[in-house]
Image 1 (cartoon, rainbow, N blue to C red):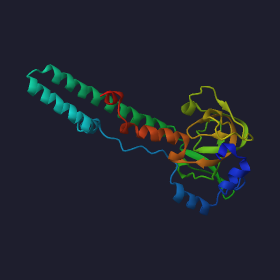
Image 2 (image 1 turned 90 degrees about the horizontal axis):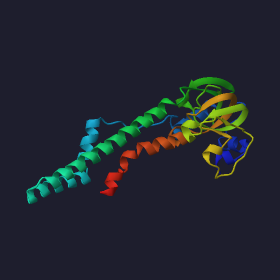
Image 3 (image 1 turned 60 degrees about the horizontal axis):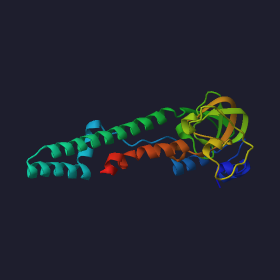
Image 4 (image 1 turned 60 degrees about the vertical axis):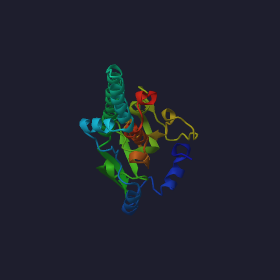
Length: 239
């Protein structure tokens, strides 16, 4: 069962945490070794030149270049060869543009991450770097905060969240921690959850961290963007 389809008591039990005290330092260290840092990862960016070389040395483009050369040598006419070369150039340009746009999008997602988080540990409320959050941490969020990770809300006080970065919904969503939802509830209707990189517009709440880093919903989007360069462009599929 998903965290949004469980009662708050069940979620706290799953993560062996306490709403009043949070995790102990020992639990935090163990969780960090298991889950790693709470941050979005982007594949190392390549220069445009490297992208172009990589595309031109791909099997499909090499095949097209050879076909163009053979066509010009065999027929003595350059029209077909020039046409094939034009296809290679267009195909390379589309691929590079797609990769560059995906890389920029991941960078934009990372810039929306919360720099700090208010977390309850050993019974004390601390302000820490958000990358140090681990599943099971009890987090306080207030108006103006970016939500630092995916949270199952425990207590909500007039909480409203702008989730447009994740769902496209332009109107802030009113949250309610007491609601228990079904497993197939769409993300835009999960009113008992808070998601990484969305913004609290009103009220405050406490929540337990359920997912961090690339395992969050926004992390799933980053993963898809990182894999864009592994997919063929529409022109490549057509060819």
